Structure formats: structure tokens, C-alpha cells
Amino acid sequence: MEQMPIGALSEATGVKVPTIRFYEEIGLLPAPIRTQSNRRSYGDAHLQRLRFIRHARDLGFAVDDIRELLAMAAEPQASCDRADSIAQRHLADVERRIAQLQSLRGELQRMVGECRHGRVAECRVIESLADHGHCLHDHRVA
Image 1: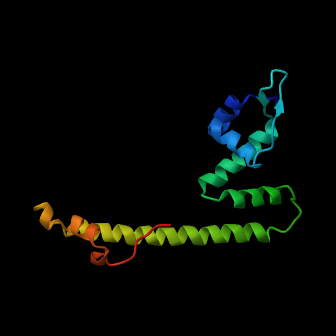
Image 2: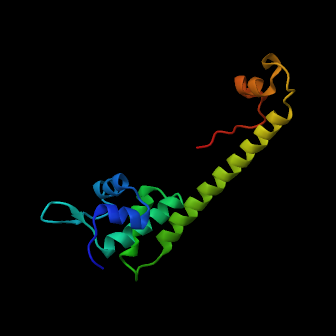
Image 3: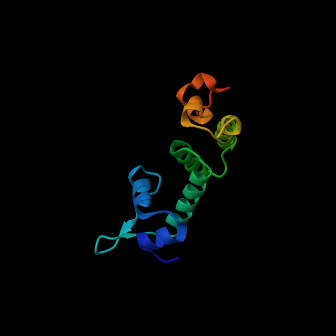
């Protein structure tokens, strides 16, 4: 594959130019070669790596986890135990957040269901938001 400018890389991956530059700054994406006019020029390795990063970010993986997964990908004969561990930890976090969101949905449905459609002074939604004691559960989403 021939070299491409940052705009073409952005278009090919759906990653915005400032984000590509950020990934370079933090070392997730290696610095590209520079043209004679000092413009960034990216190759196939950048394209593949950025697609990997994009997919991992879309799945919610943290930057540090992506960094570690990329390092593992460079050693195809190594054990994948650490990658499994990272994915399992991330899955547990996603499941915890889903449970919190389901609980939050239930509380919001209860608040809306108890709404009397009267005056603000009697509004169950305002009442519940003003006093967390009216909620059935703690719904903080991390």
C-alpha cells in the first residue's frame, strides 16, 4: 500500500485527525514518516493499528489496556492469558454498569409512573430529585 496523508487515514478509519495526533502523542500510534514538506505520511501498518485502536475504543477498552493489547499483538506466539484477563475485567465492568443502568431505568420509570401531572409543588419527579431518600436505590453510574 502506498503512503497516505493524515486526512486519508482519518477517512479510512473514521478516526478524527486530532484524535490520530493524540494517539501519536501518547505513543499508541507510532510517528509516521514525514514528507519533504514535513507532512505526516502513513502506511498500511498505521492503518491496521489505528483500526485496532478504534475497534478497542468502540468496545470501551481503556487506553492503557489498548496499549498492553497492542504490545501482546506484537508477540503472536506468547500466551494470551493477559489478554483474556483484560477482556474479562472489562466485561465485568460493563456488566456492573449495565446493572446500574437497569436499576436507574427502574427508578426513573417509577418516578414517571408516580407522576400526578399536577403542580410542581406536588411533582414526584421534582420531589425525588430534591431528596435522594425518595429513591429506592443508589444509582450512581461510574
